[in-house]
Structure formats: C-alpha cells, structure tokens
Amino acid sequence: MVKVKGKKIIKIFKIQFWVTVFIFIAYGAVIVIGGKDVFLSELNNKRSVAGASVSALIRIIGPPKKPLISISTACTAQGNSYVDLIWGSDEDSNEYDIYRGGEELMKALNKSSFKDLNVMNNNTYSYYVVAKGSQGTTISDGVSIKTGECPAPIIPKITAEIISGKNVRAENISEISQRKPFFQGKVNIPYAIINLEIHSSQIIYATVRANINGYWQWSSPVDISYGLHTLYIEAIDPNNPNIVASAVVLFDIIKDEEDDKKETEKKESQVTKFNEDGFSSENNFIIDSDGKKEKNIQQTGDRPLDFDISLENGSYIRGVNMAEEAYRGESIKATVEFIKMILKDKQANVSYSLINQDNKIVGQYFDEVVLSDGLILEKIISLPLDLELGKYKIRVSVTVDNTTVSQEYYFMVKDKPILKVGANMYISYNDFVSNLGWLFIFSTLFLFVFSCLALWEHHLCKQSLFYITEKFLKRSGFIN
Amino acid sequence: MGYKKNKNMQYLEIILQSISIIMVALTIVFTLGIIWRVEMRLDLAYKVFFCALVFLFLSKLTEFFVESDLLIMIEQVLNILFSTFLLLGIWLMRDLMRDIDGEKK
Image 1 (tube, chains in turn brown, blue):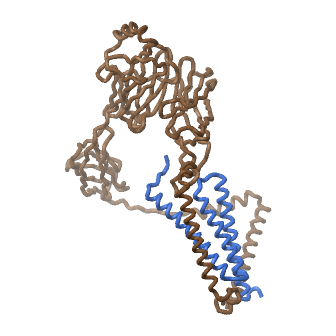
Image 2 (tube, rainbow over the protein chains, first blue to last red; image 1 turned 180 degrees about the horizontal axis):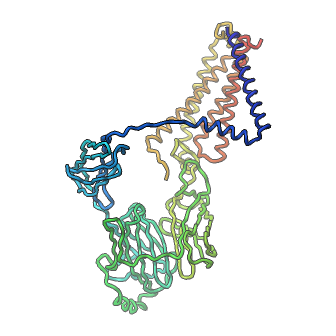
Image 3 (cartoon, chains in turn cyan, green; image 1 turned 135 degrees about the vertical axis):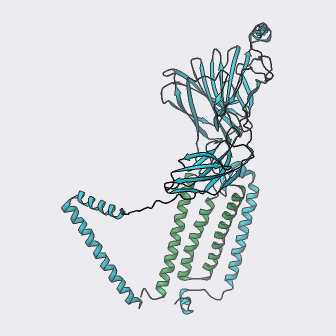
C-alpha cells in the first residue's frame, strides 16, 4: 500500500514540477520579447491587485454614545493636586459638557479629555460628562475621586561649607593661602549639576556633579592670583532645569598673614555684610507658580566655549556596563567634543587629570590645540595595575588666554572580570585567586561524584552476560 | 545603567546553569555505560554521541567565562563540533537501522 501511495504522490510532484518550469519559461519569454520594463510592470500590477481591496461603508448617524470616563488624580511640580478625566471619542458627538458636583465646569469642549486644575488636596470631587451630537445628547455615569496629599516642593538651596580646609565664615571673607582652592559644599538636589565661576584676573568656568547626598566638591584646575575673588555657584536639578539654586562666596588668597592683614582690613570695610548663612544677602532662588525660575542674583555668565566628555573603555565585555567602569591595567579613551566655540583659531592648553576620591591627582596629561569648529579631541589614559580601586574622575580643563573651562567625568576603577556566574555576577582575577581554595574543593567534589558514578556504571557492565549487537537487537525483536 | 536583575533572579539563573551542566555530565556517564555494553556499529554510533556530549559540556563550561571576542569564537566552534558529531551519530544509527530493516538490500 505504501508503494502505491508513493507512486501517486510522485506523479503529482512531477506534474507540479513541469507546470512550474512552464511558468518560468513563459516569464522568460515575456522578458525577452517585451523587455525588462514590461516584466516589472506586470509584477507591480500583480502586487497592487493582490493588495487592493474595495469596500463601501455606509454609516447611519445616531445619538452620541455614552461616554465612559476614566478618572485619575496626581500632583503638579508646585505641590498642587489636579484631576484628569479621559473618555473615548465618538463620531456622533460634536462637543462635551463637563459637570462637577452637579454644576457646570466646562461647556462645549471639543476633545475627549479634561484636566481640572481647580481642586484642593484631600477633597472628593464627582463628575459627569454630557455628550452632544446632531441626534441628541447622552449623559455619562457619574464618577468621583479623592485628591491626595501633595508634598510641598523642595526649595533648592546650595551652600559652600569648606574652602581649602577652612570653614566658610559668616560675616567675613574666607582667607586662604592655597592658590588652587578646594571647595566643598551641599545642595539639597541629588545629582545636581553644579556650575561654578570665578571672576578675577583669570576667569574660570567649571561644571561638576553632586552625589546622591547632594555633596559636591571642586578644586580650581589652575593657580588663582592673590587677592579677592568671587565664586558664583549655580545648582540645577537634572530632572527639572527650572529648579535652580545659586550662591556667592567671596574668598581672599593671601601671600602671607602679616603682610596682607592691613590690605584685608581695607577690603572688609568695602564688602557687603553677610547674613547668618555666610553668604551675600543677594543669594536667592524662586520658582513661580508656572515653574519658571527667577533670580535676583548675578547669574553665571555665558561661557566662551563648552564641551562634552565621554569615556570609552579599552575592553569589550558583553553584558557589562561600560559607561562608568574602567579596569586597572588597561587604558581608557577620553573624547572631548566641543559644543560651543566662540574663541576660534586660538591656541589652547588642554589638561587631562585623573583624580581619585581623595581629590589627589594621580595622573596628568597635557596637550596644545588650536580651537576650531567641530573640534574633537581624543586622549588615551592608561590606568596602572597598582592603581587603587574606587571612584575616580577625569577632569578636562581647556585654557585659552585668561579663561579656563573645565568639566569632570566620574567613573569607577575595578578589576577586570574573568569569570561570570549566572547572568550578572562577575568574578575578577583577584577574587578568583582569593577563593581558589573553595573552587578547588568544589571541582574536586564534582569530579569525585562523577568518577564514582562512572565506576558504578562500569561495575554494572561487568555483570552483563554478553555484549549487545545490532544482530541481537533484530533477533530479539527490538528492531522490526 | 542598564537593566539590573534582582538577587532572586540571579540565584535562579545560577541554579539553572548548574543543573544544566550537571545533567550534561550525567548524560556523559550514562553514554559511557552504553558504550561499555554494546559492540560493533552500535558501539561506534554511541562513541560519536559521546564526543558530541563532550563538546556540549565544554561549550557549557565556556559560559562561566566573561565573554570576549575570542571566547565567543571558541564557543561557536564547540557548538558546531557538537552539532556535527550529533548529526554523525544520528546518521550512523539511521544507516544501521536501514541495514537491519533490509532497505539497503
């Protein structure tokens, strides 16, 4: 039976084969006679006919459908509640009236959503919607919601607490002798972007980031001249650029205490008195009801140039996040892309500093470049094998004439992983060596267990009467 | 930063990875048991299966190493060897069955 069935199937296949060959020959003839264009237009026709569809739609206009309202509540950035109403749109409805508490709230609305901003926290509101069309009106079911307690917006504040190891003193200028002063402070915005400016004989622009606790630190990349200087600090919320805090710090870099005492006394009489916080009374931040910022303090000025830094690790390890990690013993590539350039065709000194978490420079590179539009700089920075593990930053400073602009990029230095357990646990060479004992025990146990299993299996084989062959299988009926 | 799996998922993945490699090791042991019990062409076919399983085991071991270009290449080569030997073993068994049921006569 199988053989007869097979013959019929083969016959069908043969017929199909020759039909297919004939079709191909026919198309070949079309190309030869009519040319390629005829063939292509023929194919296009077939495709458009295959995809075309004709339909006729008749719709009877009826009364509006009952709106099904979806209601929710949330808080604005200013700490006020609002209620969101959404309902499905309907072709039979031309406009909608919204009622709250039985009274009109909005009339002749031509969209199917509404945001009620005129609500108070911790109150219950009930709504219904009337859909109006050419064939009548339909009223939705009533819905109600209770607004929540919206937290008051955080008023941003930034402070500078310490300058070069000295506390910022209220009602006085901070006197320091370090020509590269080191500033530390706090801001109540996690990961805030901190823009710093020093205006003096040398103008310095810098950008740093606060950490999750709002702690920020910055040290001047270049020596600052002796005398009185002003540091302008601006903190921007990375999630909402409208939230800004500013502060001003005056500091005096002195050569020697005795020589400069008289000069300092002179300067103090000329300086604005400070408030209790130790800052000029001018420091202020305001966010108005529309979320716009207003400042009545001198803003940080426009920089003559600005750039972005990106880091690239030398090794590629699939599945490991490379953006903020680097491995000691290897190198990283810092790419500096200039996004703003007013000082073109000028010679600039570029410095790349590798700074550890104690703010010590562990490596430094220098370059001289000529600034031009679209300039991109790349620098390979090697991380020695004996570099301590931890958090580091690359500070790139570009100095042109008497202006310095610097930016920092943070990353972690780790040991390069060599083993991967599961999908996300990585073991470095050092970890491997320190746990070698456990690994040896585990591997030995594994080998021992499976060796025992193999020996047991061999022992069972020795008890067999004969070897199995294919002839035996056939004789015993295992194979038909 | 990328998708971070929680601890439970990580432990589950480690357990599944370990179970997989243990099962392949057990399969190797039992295949040895079959090889010791058979002869002639059955023996040859199961020896080829044994080679395939060894390459599969080595391929699973490479999963414990951090992926690099070289390691990915090695893993692919081991996978190809496993597939080749598995195919060869199945071919030998098929050939044997065809011989026994009289197809080739």
